[in-house]
Image (cartoon, rainbow, N blue to C red):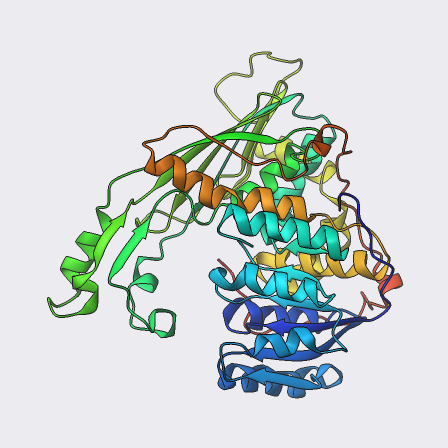
Length: 442
């Protein structure tokens, strides 16, 4: 499936499965893309289906779905089986991603699936082999690959500004303690034990890094070493927040506050990943990449850049000035953000990157182009979940990462993330654009 392109789809007929937070936001973005037809909406909860259907009636009357599916744990099969559906957009809880993706491909649907797409190596291989056998796209919806700073970094890497790349760092640091311990729909079945080892949510930082380093296209991730800290924050939070008889106070906690993993690639590069759902630390994805000529550090404001006059030359203790940085950022701004960045920011979705992601896969499908991320990316990025857990449980012992390309990474060409032609899509760039309701920000 490397470089695979399905026949052009003038109309992309979609079913959305799981239309809570992320799925609902996706419905409200995709309905704005010409050529995308929403055939079906599906969710376990009827109220979620009704809410999105009513919003479409009021805001995008020409995109009201023909059918809805809801009410039981297997209702998503009806959406996948629908003969008028070409593409299934999956935004259910992560433990269902692989099951639904496999079923959808087996009934000849292309799949767009939220992150991570799978939690086990077996599921990763099953997805790869099913995509190959059915000749159906299975792309993981890693929105961070389309962030403005991430695509700037991608351009800096591929234009040679940073020289020969040697190391990258990324993280998903997002304090979710209150959400994870709340009495809410998310926690409708309170657990008796909370156990978490390794990095269970690696793809937001890892996806962009793999695109910087051309992983699966000239390089591959070979091994991982992963360790977690002790568990401190949850215990302190529970002790100060809940009563002794509350279910939270009875939790058996076996999870570290922060996990750190180091990945080594076949070409000798290193990747540092961190995951912290727990501590009161400001949100960050770090997003750092360095090479023989310079370094880019792209999360937070201002982003930073250092470029040497020649490989290894001393640059002093300071990053380049804001004026110099702005000149580089303007010169190497990715074409996607040049052409649709302002529209994307108005529509929304994590600063606009969600809309750019949706616009890009839609453009590729409409024009019969390979997608920016393929099933091998999906599998290799998702495999970190199980492999980091194995390493963590073994005290940080190295664990080999699978080669889902079966050696094809050695000859595969780097992927070029291109622009979109709004006029060709039928998108009126001059028309007023309003923010899509319900878009997620962090």
